[in-house]
Image 1 (cartoon, helix red, strand yellow):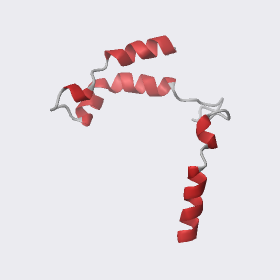
Image 2 (cartoon, one colour):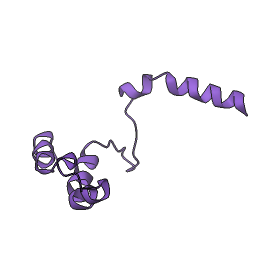
Image 3 (cartoon, one colour):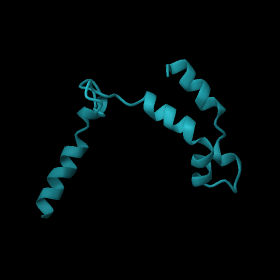
Image 4 (tube, helix red, strand yellow):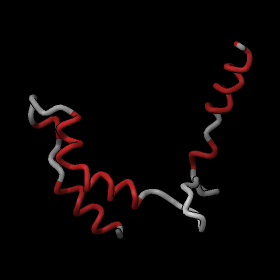
Amino acid sequence: MDKKNEHEEMDKMPIPQKKEDTTFADFVSKNKEIIYKTAQSNTVVNESGLTVIPKDDPWRDEKEWDEMYEDLKKQC
C-alpha cells in the first residue's frame, strides 16, 4: 500500500473519542482491516520475511533504553 492510499484508508476511520460509548475494542473490531493494512505498510521486512528495524531508524539512537537496561542489570 502506498502512502497516499494509506492516508485515504486512515481518513475513513472514525475517531473513537467522538462517541463516549465506543470502547477501544469496538474501534479495533470495526477497523481491524484498515489498522492491519496501515501496520503492514509501516513495517519493514528483510529478504527472509522477518520484521526488522532499519539502520537509519531514529529509534536506534534512543539512549534511554540502554539506560533502562543498565538500571535493570543493577537491580538483579
